[in-house]
Length: 131
Image 1 (cartoon, rainbow, N blue to C red):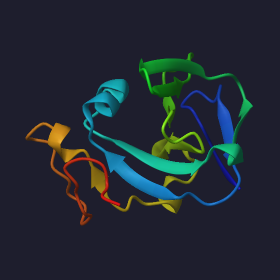
Image 2: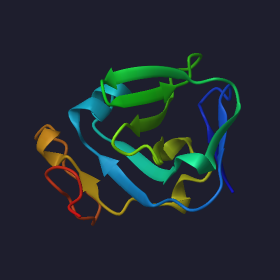
Image 3: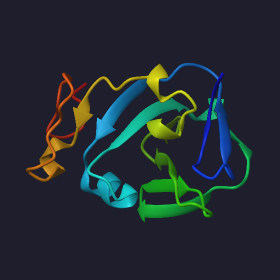
Image 4: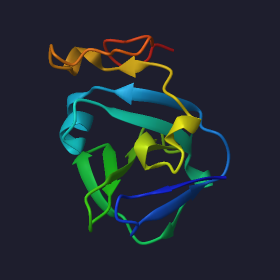
């Protein structure tokens, strides 16, 4: 069982089962939504994820994407895309143990500003990770 939550503690979630992916996204949309150069994500099966305390606010950042965040402290929590209805991405740093699932790659480097260059020894892809 994996648990996590927002900065203020108003939202707590639980996930049963391992993730299918862990990555750092540098796309313009994620960067803007988080106010950060990049966002680390861990992907889980949607049916294994549940909010156990509080109610996250939803924001449709584009027609196919829904992001959730804590309405009290603003912590970005999840990302869902209509093309991947069986998966939910959870912001890695909201996990109680963010070291449990280190990222395996960087994605969307073509959107990153010139000063945002990965320092980790991980593959970096111009767009999403190739299949």
